[in-house]
Length: 433
Image (tube, rainbow, N blue to C red; front, side, top):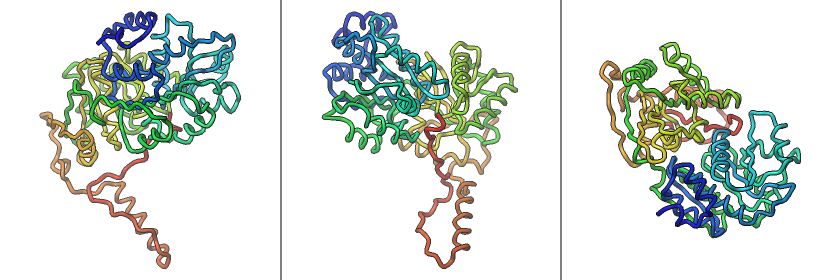
């Protein structure tokens, strides 16, 4: 199977060849013909398997075939993404594959000035890539006309739901023409995603090229048990001892990312952090420095787990396990992309084992455990340690205090919290993007 077998035009085949690709991935083999036939598509595939080209290539061909060549163009295709980084990545793909076509594209997202975006939109675009919040800003200011949209793409739609974009998405859907082609692409599959697909898509072609919520097979996964207060020391040791040149490290919080980057820098490792509180200019600069090798370690939150497309990234480290197991799949999907091998390392302390069990249950596999000599965890940090975590004690205190303050008022029945299970944190919200 080659790209020539998929019905793509000569101009698109030239652009694909220029990019160095010869054989389509499984998701591309199934998605491209379905999109070219004008069908709604609901596709799920592992991170790093070529989903972006799976909808970008046929979208470009459909628009180019019916290109009205208007002087004042309004968007005919709209691609929604959850993060700025992913929006940039998708727009880069549109430009790369469409370089021999006369179609115009633009990208709009928050965190940067809106005036330059308004000027670009006024010049006219055929394909608009956007994050939901900033797109609604343009709608409110009447700087974009969505009445001519023929194709809607929801990219990484599961992440958009996680980040609280569902209301914004529904507002945008109400503006778009009802007679359109809709494509949904996701790396993970869940009931909310299926429910959304049922409401948006008309007789869709459903594509699932790998078992649901699985990691790429070429990614080697290993867990290193370690005490929480020795994680940073172990991370510095591994990077130095193994001479890792490029490492993407994930933390749960923005403050934790900043602190870890500063600590690693003091250890002599050039490091920087990327997260939702950083300006877009700072995020772009940090990513470019990392790609160019100016920075050895990039510390990121889960906001950055989507849209970071780094060629042949060798190592991803979970400094802290995510409290949402699907996010683990997206994190380690930053390595082992496009068929390359990668290694995903997780540093796990005692109170994170419930998170680890959730991840293993999602993957339907037990991850290899390897204790690093000299960094053996203490007995209280071993798996199975039956100690309540701080969030649980805090929740229990609030519950007891509420009962003591209102003894005569019936209270809502609460589910008991199992000892040793960390309280679930809220997922990232749209405001963090």
